[in-house]
Image (cartoon, rainbow, N blue to C red; front, side, top):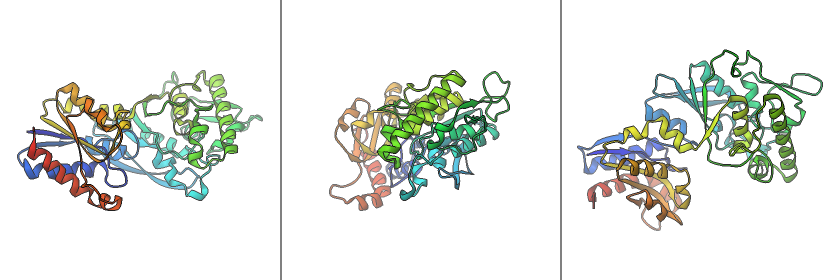
Length: 383
């Protein structure tokens, strides 16, 4: 029997790699002769680097970069097991909200410069394809900081070069953008190598306006209503300059407002393409090819509900399994409203915890619960 184990992480409890290992232990309890292939997954958010490095036999690296407030942080990133042609980074590792103490959260002052440094590092390592997860940002700088890190220049009204790193509150000072041919990330037609940048983005917010980066996500990052208004004006100003100086209209592109406008910045300054996160991840690990001929796929995530059908790992795995004619069963931490919708794609789903367990006890018991539930599924399979 050939079994694919392809879970997401169980947030606040176990990473995808540990979830896969626990499920595998349960399978071996009942079917020690099973051929097991573990493919830890993520949807482009937290855990994407670790999942992709593990699933492809890649290499995890760490680089010191500029944090969201200008401090130095050590950020993990990865080269996948394709001879290092593909790199994967999470912007949250360099520019994430978790790096900013609660009392210092103010997106007028935070920057994506460190994310740009990670991209530059991946380019210097020889990657020709870079996957960027942009969830969990602390920033609303429209990607201007990241652009500076790869050589893009921003000038003020007096023609003076604005110093790095730019933050969300400084965008109004920009009067001109220049992408010189000797930038670390060269402009198309400059003759330099230009890697493909693919961005895991699961929101469709525009850059500015009522549904824009500042209005929707600014308060989560510590912005007051007055600061939201400033940031929104600044992003609109940046969009005007990008249109005038770079010839790109990014303001209404779906996803442009993701990660404080980093979605727009990656399109404008890096020629990036925004895609659904789980699709990017599954393509990177060659998921469709690896599940062919399997007898069963076991997947899982911390919570199953109606939202699971909207770009989450379980839905992606379920669709791939359905297309390949391989049954998919999910192990889940808890079940919420609308979970039954996933049965369009899944053979079934199984809550792993006994009823009445406290949150703390459930988190502590997750590895054993996954193992026991996987064993029970295999013991009764295919019934």
